Length: 630
Image (cartoon, rainbow, N blue to C red; front, side, top):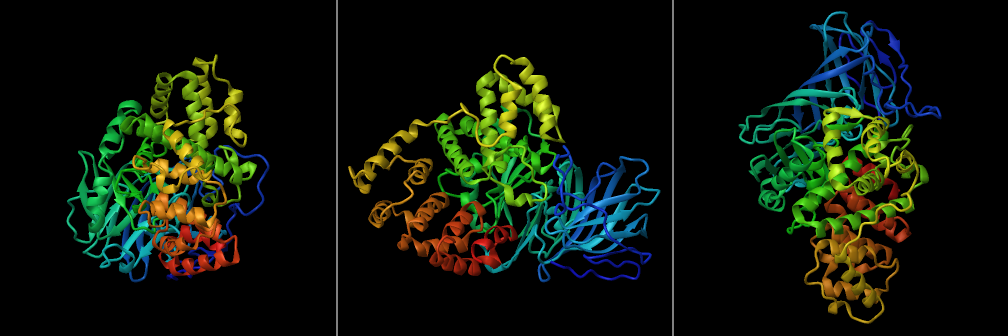
């Protein structure tokens, strides 16, 4: 995509060629991910950022942005405060994507800059000549309506139907599409922001939010703790707030506010339980923002204000492990962060492990065990379908878009690895290790190698009789799951296995299966472990007995609709279409589009749904699924 940049009296740039204020044209010297990479990975190097934090590191951002819904544009400025890591450094390199840069200044005077050619997914490097005196510069800019990290929703695409809605999604490398900055998780910044909106709307950010702030169209924010760029987040809409506890509350549109607050009422209990075991919560408040259904993820762990999909409002708290997951990121991810996207498992593996622990502490061992079994099955599905190189924790992502390689490997395999450490040394000892780990690396971004060195110097040294570096390296650097890894088990699924086997054998009819006491996890286990092929009679029998096609639980509906596509059960196809056009969460829609793409008739159905839904999908959802409908 090419963006035409505004010309000023002293500044001109284009995405293909840079122009400095003195009229000199330059090409960037930064190596892009699309170029050849060496065979050896340089540990700690962020291959997904053009920035130069080893020479000049940005430490604080001051944003002043106006939200323009008509033009689908954020416009204004960002002041970047920096420090010279190398005293002789005279250039600051920032990441951008499809930004229009109108001016760069320091000490009130315009300074030279160059915007390089656009890389396929990394964007364009913005190189700024730093003045000899001073430690901050100001960039005037505006975003593109197609910014990959920003979604603009019309009133019709919201619950209230009266006002537009805006939200950002920065992970993995999308912050650069709405702020010129060093878009690397190894660069941590504090930030302040002034956001100017239509007066009827409320702005919230991953910062200190005041639920009682006047709706006057000008909102001030501060994030005093240093965070990586992928955690900078903004949302603007007709939002309302309801407290759930002393430190927890929920923002959403009015029509779902009460349902969301009731569904997630245990958030405060989760927070207290996690603090008790893993140390103090470092972010003051923990609030939730319930986004429109187009949000592409289950949740995003933006500090102080997690962004949450409405698809987990099931009415029975059966899907609240997602809230536990985003809360757990307040320790693993937000406070101790992966330094590069190769190290993503340090965020997600630790967080998934903590999620299971939180669910056990708040809801009991039975709930924990069921979710652990389901997680292990999801991991095995990815292992069965991914290339060997994509099954390792410390993955090689050079030359690849990090969005394209998110899977259950960093999440569930990472958590299983930590569970093995726990089982080897005992829970009490492992909890002591985690508490020390979070404290030792507090507000730091670290690599896999740094974690392994710390692990070797602490837990392995103290428990050398049961832990070995060979086994640890196998977990991190080898594909699949090592032999004799922990195997989660749940007694609650025994009755489900028996019921499914009896029904498949014809010993009982579906209507005679005793499901009255089943919880959502048992339903998911029942459906997810069906044989690949079922007859139309079997499908109709299940549907008649349990009304699965009309399930209001989005996870159960997903499992059933996937079975329906794979077995071409046409009575479910109207619901399938409604499902695909009403939500944009990739975990739920992508497998359905993929399954539909396997047949010509299915692809026609997919194309119809995608065409209808595309304008309401987030750019990430469009990118993830457009290949299935081409």
